[in-house]
Structures are given as C-alpha cells and as structure tokens.
Length: 82
Image (cartoon, rainbow, N blue to C red; front, side):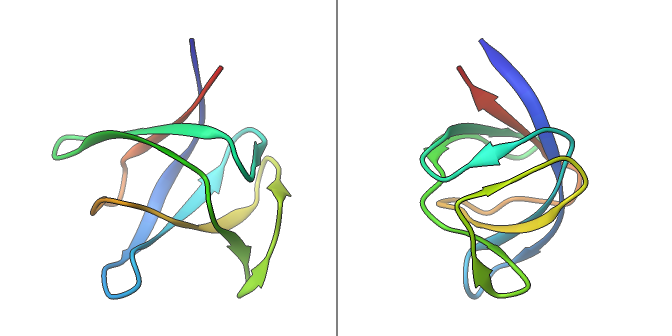
C-alpha cells in the first residue's frame, strides 16, 4: 500500500537532490516510490535536509531536500510505501 506524501518542486542534478513539498510525514529510512511521466522508481530515504541541516523526520507543509537515485522532474509524485 502507498500513501502520497508530496510533490517534487525542484531538482538539482549535480547533487542528485529533489526538493519535495510534503503533504504528510516522511522519515529517514522510509521506503518511497517516485512516479512521474518520465520516471517510476523505489528507494529508501537515506538523506533528508531542511535549509542544509540534516533531519530525521519532517511533516506536512515542510519543503525538504531528499537525495534521490534517479533524475526526477517538477510535479513528480512521492509516495511512502507501507
């Protein structure tokens, strides 16, 4: 089962980081599924930041940076797998 937790608002290709605005909580170690018109992949959250400060969890309304294993695009949807 999957729960939508946010959307990608920006991607930094040189460092492989997606900026995600959250609509639900997300934590370090959660398994996520990122899906969009060009990508569809699963990964574990291994690095999260807010304003360049490492965090272990974030909640609704937070803009976070998440290290991703594949390129993503603005508007891609992020799901948390349960």
